Image (cartoon, rainbow, N blue to C red; front, side, top):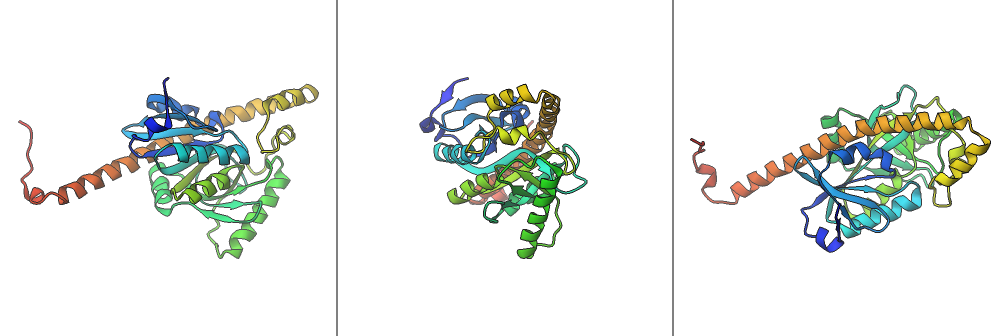
Length: 293
């Protein structure tokens, strides 16, 4: 795969940037890309290509607040991005959200300061219609929600925050670590964004506490710390492998939803452009339709 510099990428058509924290979350989507080539963007692994005819940049930033912020900012600085689609797994906060449940996130709550980030309404509407995903709300937490009690706390926090904002929609809730960061970076850049999340661990389930203990100051899970931690808690390995398998299953659902959404958006834009071009050419709209012999 060749590496394209920012200068070369600048001559690309406007791109849809599909952004995730972890490579496992986008591996099935990367497999769908046609004409893959790497692009240089410090702080993110970026692959350019096409989904159908739609030009996209698939970016993996690394997990945690620091990596998410730096990675997406680098992508937006290096490439001509017209919209950002965030994809990835999340923990369920609302009872009844099963593993692989797919949500289009309308709003994101930042646990740190209670701020609300609203996704682009048109993109959210299109994604929900095209992918069939439910609408929902995400809470970006300061730590991994690794117990059912912690998930209940975040559920209550989100409900109170939404009620204070006059939101009585009662949409399903999920929790992640990066959505509010991605939303804030895209918002500051003036780039429309939306978010797709798939549930990897339902509300009643816990995940190994080892993951929280293995995070660095930027919020990323250090794999080396996980390995060391498993030496004293080898029983966690089975649970971590099961969680990895769920992440991979979620990634397949996310890949299909993201690809359908991107391709439909691009087709609609091409059709709109064609109509605009026809209207800009005097007399063309009155020309009789021709057919091939």
